[in-house]
Each structure stands twice: as C-alpha cells, then as structure tokens.
Image (cartoon, rainbow, N blue to C red; front, top):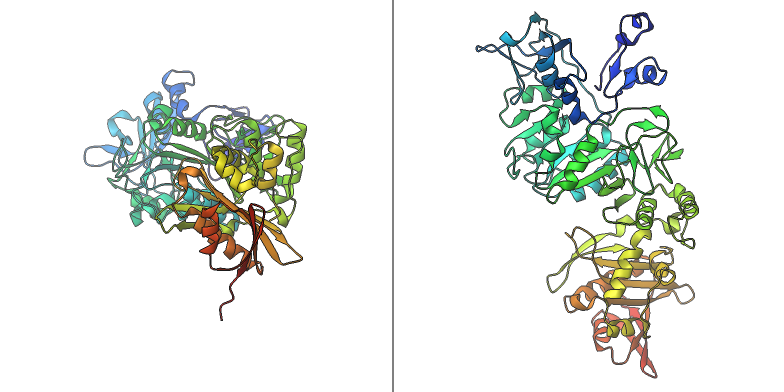
Length: 562
C-alpha cells in the first residue's frame, strides 16, 4: 500500500530473496517499479481484500501493529484497518507487534490474542504524516469546493495540501458527515468544532467511518476509544454499493491530468507509473449513484512550476485512465468550477478550457478545434482582457424577495445563453432586439459569451441553489470611448418578470459602469415597452429622451451626488 518512510526491502541485495509487489505506488517504491525491479498490481482498493479471501494472493505471514490487549484479550488494529483486517483473517501466521502508542479505535478493528500466533511487545512512536502547508492556489481551490458542499452532506476527502485547504473552508457548514478511506487531521479538526457530527447520515448515523488514518499524534490521541468514530475494512468503506446508499455523498479527489473530454489519470504520468488506482474510482462512482451525490475532481491547473498544463487535449500516451468520462460531475481548479455531468464533448471542452491556466487557453482552443471537439470558429479573447473577473460575482435579494446570483458571463456559457434566449416569448425577443428574429445561432451567441471585459460587460442573473445554472436575466453594456458612456440593454425571462430581477440587474450594471468612470448609459427602447421605460425612470438617472418613429433614444446620465 502507500508507504511512508524508507523501503529497505527494495535494495538490490535482497532481489534473490523476494520480489516486491505493491497495490499502490509511493515515493519509496516508484523508481524500482518503473525500472522493472519491483511490481505494481493495478486494482481498486475495495477489491484488494477479496484477493486474500479467495486465495488469488495467498498470505503466508501477516506482520501488524496493534494496541495493548484489554482485560478481555482484545487488541485493536488502531489507525490501519483497511486491508489489514483481511490479511489477518487469511494469513497462515499472524505476528502482532504490540505498541502502547497505538490507539484503540472503535469498529471492526479488534483482534483477540487467541487468534494470533505471536505477540511481540515493542513501543515506538507511530509514523506521523505532515501535509504540506496550503499555498494560495490550494486555498483558492478550497474556496471553490466549499461552495459545492452543502449542509448535511457526507464527504470523502484525500490527503495533501489541496484536500486540507478544502477542509479548512468548511468551517461554516453544519451537520456534515464522513464516510472515507482516509481520516486526516483536517477531518478531526472539523469534528472538534462540531461541523462534522454525522447527525444526518442515513447509514452509520452519528459515526465518522474510515479505513485508516494518517496524521499527527494529537489526531491519533483523539481517536482512542472515541465512540464517534468507526474504523472499517476497505471492502466496506470503499464499496460503491455502500457509498451509493448515502444521501448527499460527496467524493472529493485529485488527479494528475485531465483531458478535454473529461477522462482523468491519477495513477501515471504518461508511461511512468506514479501512484495507483487506489480508492478514488470506488468513491467517485459510488457518489454519482448516491441520492443527491456529487463527484468532485480537484486539480491544480499547472505542474512543473507552471510550465505544463494539467488540462490537456488528450491524456499523455501510456497514461492509465483512472476516471472515465462518466465518473466526474465537477472539475475544480484555482480558476473556477466546470460542471461536466450531462454535457456533450463540445460543452465539456469549453468548460474545461475556461478553468485552465490563462496562458494555456489559446493552445487548448487551437488543439480542441484540430480535434473537432469545438466549433472551428470559436472566438476567444486572450490575456487579461478575457480573464474572468471572479471578484464581480455577487448575491442579491430583490425588493420582491427573490434570491439571485449575479455574475459576469463566462466563455463556456453559450449553452446557458441559448437556453435563456429560446425561453423568451416573441414579445420579449422583439422588445429586446427590436426585431422578430427567431434564431440564436452559435455565431450570434458568441457575441454574448466571448467578451473583452475591459470594453464591455455581460451580467447573468442566475437562480442560486440549483443543481445546474438557470439564467433568468441578462444585462449588458458596451462602452463608447468617445462619449465615455455605454449602451445598455437587459431582458428578464418571462416567467421571472415582476420579481425585481430587472431592477437588480440594472443597479449592478450601473455600479460596474461607475467603477469604470463612465458618465452614463444610452439605450433604445420601443415606445410601447412601458415596463423597461419605467425601470429606467426608477433607476435614479437624469434622463434625456428623443423619439424616432416608434423608438425612444435615451440618455441616462448618472446623477452626481453633492
């Protein structure tokens, strides 16, 4: 399995005695495996115990650490139940190192002295795992993932600086549950804070369930005889059929590389074996099948100090596909959230390009076009002019009590815009475009989705708390440099009108225009479009109105407060 510390058994001097085989690759074994001096068995972690029970991999000797026996003769496997339980059950010879530093963990962790062959008392400090401190990139990813976790969800999180950053962003959540293979310092900290109480889990209620723990001494001490925790073997914790039963199961895992169609590798860098399948496929697939479950893949956008993109046109030659195109709901980088579930390959490619590192987006667009994944004429604004201004996202409550999320348009929003415009009535279309056009093709939609944020702005009003974004309003302005004003237009979906959404859209567009130092807006409004005229009249502008046939040409000057 994943091994901490040194691995002297891989030295050349022992190659005549035995050959090492691992179910998961760690730093100590990586070089030997890739040089052909040791072996790697690719397998889902949940299925490893079955290899022992069926005798496919026979176990001659199990050498394990346990806690001291209690008065009934039971020793605990402590922080490592995972595949150890099965190894003890199947081994011809069981040798237990009794270590006073091993905590007694509740669950399926107990071994009776009568069922082992030798007991060797030897106290030594348990290996402690010190995760890297979260950098700004990890913190940003953690913030995005925190948006996806809802009160009452049950989570599974891996190890490392990004998972730790994710956990640190969950401090305001309520009644979270845990069903995971790894119990980490971050999970224990949330348990101490009361954020994780497992009170809403529909199975193993009130229990944090895990297979093993890697952390600091204080975490190990917290586990000892703690009835809020249960350690189970991986054939339970990682069983997709069990995971799929948990309401709101949310699996959060990392990857080394993902391609534009959504398939990812977490086990190899091209032909180089790097880690292993492990348990993430078990959890991601189980979470997808769970009621209201979510499968979240987190990945830093670049590697090698920013020299290469982890989002690629296609996986490197020789890479193992750990997660298929159907195994992921969300992909999160430090540049945002891409939702892939139910999306076609073109939509997936655009979503993933939009969260790639900006310096690789032009390359990814070019490669995607060459692979016929996206439109051949797909436009793009390079550099800072086209970089999504996340800081402009805001939640608002309208004067009619409607909750909306206002955000700038994104490169990948073309499908949402298409749905929005086709949802509008003929009257709304005519009032917005002063035409009877019925179509909204890709070429036209690009004018709304691909923008230079320094010269124009398109703001979407989105209903929050939906599984997928639903656009209920679109407002925009384009700057006229000569007059230092901007032409403004907005439209609200028919079934959402008279809820104050248009008022909030106009108010926010006004705020954004003032931020850029503009003097006011211009607009063309049909004479019979009384709702829009009323909206502008209530907007706090100094209005100049001129009529041309059946259209009012308006100047909406921002009032200067004395």
